[in-house]
Every structure is written in structure tokens, then in C-alpha cells.
Length: 366
Image (tube, rainbow, N blue to C red; front, side):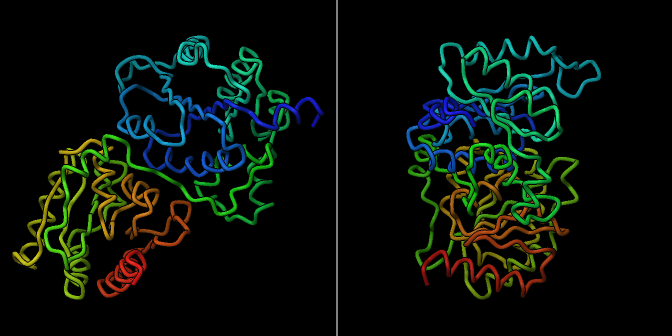
């Protein structure tokens, strides 16, 4: 590294992060660990996110746009036409870059970081934006010629895995840290993170949820309502047995989260659950009634969040709420390895209740 580059890395003020992998809630929140690590290295730095998405209007945009670690977030569409239609076409590179220029007009930048492991599109956009802003381009030398695109490049993801002794496939949270290795920034256990936005705090103030002081508050997210995610959804009968076993040992009020298209499965669960417990448990279903920021406020009030492998699972973990994630099959890259989180694969009722009680006790300091 030249003395000039070293000098420019002493205290960068504005850093642009370019991503394109996925617009899933979990995928973007996973990146917050890298944002926190950047802020730990340079406390005064302003982080700007540019996310390439297939179309506008993803629900997660609201959550990420208000993330406390980001100075700004920009969502650039890379396709034109109606989402999902056969006529939808990828926009040319100049059009994508034009959107980026408009979004970042007047914004000074010191570093432009390509967070993507593979592909050439984000690499070329990183190089072009860095030149336009007289910034340093940072990325991953995933293949030999790719390193020539950047001013600073990290070794390949395979080298990163070997260096840190990580399993394959790699924990999703580690992905952004591959690029940060070019800057000498390591994860060192940094967790994902989220705070309630002003909108979330206002909803929480209007909706205090505890009804009985001696009872815990459990939020259940059955989730996985899209067709591709259905295999990850817990079986309702098993979920009822598990929560009934927990209720027998530690009564709680139950609140269900969910998107509008998950109201039917929530209703089915409530019928089964109340047929088992009767009116002993207070149940409130919020599916389809809350924005994503308000959903975060719901999760934040819980003594325990129980979720499938879906967005609210990652939101609860990032908020620091005790979280039990129910997996239908082993999915190590999706696990969060930190205090207050348990990932169980098709647990029986006794296993579930025991793990849930441990989480509730640890969260309350008991």
C-alpha cells in the first residue's frame, strides 16, 4: 500500500457501500455487522448504501433507509418493466450508473466499497463511481483480473474462509467482511444490529402490549409465506404443541406478526392454539396491520421472539431480543452465533420449552 493510499485511509469521512446480492430483510440486516465494524474503525465516518434491486418498492427499503448506522440509503433498479413479467429487461450499465449519479449528486466520497464477492457489474460501477468522486475503489479479488479494477483488493472468499477457519457455505454475516479485509477490518464477533426508528418508537409508545404484569410477552412469527419459502415454515400442529408446553411452565401473552399474505396461516394457528389452551392465553394477531418499522417495535417489546427462518428472525436478533428460530432443516449459514439466540431444527415440545425458558431467563437477568 502506497503512502498516499495509507494517508487517505487514516480518517475517511464518507464511504459508499455497493451491494446487489438480495433485497431480503435478513440479507440486508446481516450487513449491519460490517457497518458497525466500519464505524468502530472510523467513528466519524458517514456510511452511504447503494443497493441494486430488481424493482422499486421492496418492504425492506423502509427499514434500511432509517437504519441508525447509515447516513443515507439509495435503491437503484436494474430492471425495467413489470416485476416478474417476461417482458422485464435488465437496464444497460449506463442507465444504472445514471441512477447512481443522480442519487449521489453532490455527495463527496472517500471510499467506494464493492461488497459483492462475484460478478463484474458492481465492480465496474465501483470503479466508475470512485473515479467520478476521486475516491479509492475497494473490492474482492475473487478472480485474478478483478483486482486490477480496485485500488485496494481483498483476497478471494475462499482465501478468507481458510484464513478464518470458516465452514462452507460461509455464514451470511461474514460476506461483507470479505471486502473489508482489504482495509484490515475483521469481524471479531461483531453482531448484526438495529434500533427502533422514530416511527417505531412512536408506535411502541401508543401500543404498550403487556396485559398481565406476571406474564411474559411472546411474539410468534410463523412467516415464510412466499412460495419459495414455504418449505421453511414450521408445521402448525408441532408449533402449537411446543408453545402449549412453554405456556404450561411459564404463562405468556402471545402476539403474532406477519405480512398481509400471512393472515390465513396465522388464523389457522390461532384456531388450533385456542382449541388447545382455550381462553387461558391472550392472543393478538397483527398480520397485515403493521409497517416493517412498526413490526420492529412489536418485536422489541417481547420477552421472547419465536420465528421461522424469515425476516423477523433477523430483526429480533438485531434488536437484541431473546430469539428462538425454528428450522425445518439444518441451515448453518442462517444461524446467528451469539448470546440470546437459539436455532433449533424441528424441536419436540420439551426441547422447545426448555430452550425458550433459558432464553427468557437470560433476557430478564434471572
